[in-house]
Length: 231
Ligand code: DX5
Ligand code: ZN
Image (cartoon, rainbow, N blue to C red):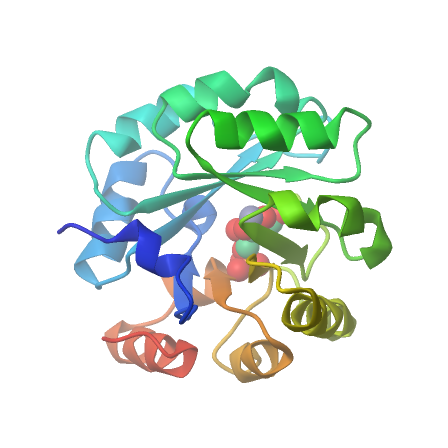
């Protein structure tokens, strides 16, 4: 399968259901990826956790590189790291398509975002539920995607925080008004039941871990259709 990645970022802003393989089998992530790909999904979310910024540890650039060798899907790499700026080259080299970094830790965000684009990757800024949306305003011009966390980052399987949708609405209005080009992604606790709330608020990319992996084939199909993706 080949995918026209540019279409994700085109004027039509297609909606995407993005399975998070955090909820897959970590002893067989290639198998989890193949499952997602067989199901027709074209965008996969990869959660990198460093044990400092979040109280959990997952995987690093080697795993991303090994997955890259097995797939052509769009690899959306969400760096939950205290020092993401020290790993941008490694994750770019590994074959990430999009690299997203959190606004909360203290480093030069503008420089890191411009380095991501300099590495010919799509750039994303991530904001936690408790962080004021204004904190990302200085970076909106230099990102391809804004990721609004709808749970506290660190673990899959948590409850969706609906109040974060206010942030999604603000960012949706802002991009209309100012002509920004970013996509809006939501991540955490997304289910077939709350997905429409997210899309109505303006979300384009819907990350789903637990709800996706625990679903049977027909629920997955319904999930993707709700997201507005072809199945
Ligand atoms: C949480 C991660 C999410 C996680 C979502 O820290 O960033 O991507 O995989 O999983 P669910 O859908 O189970 O909340
Ligand atoms: Zn994530």
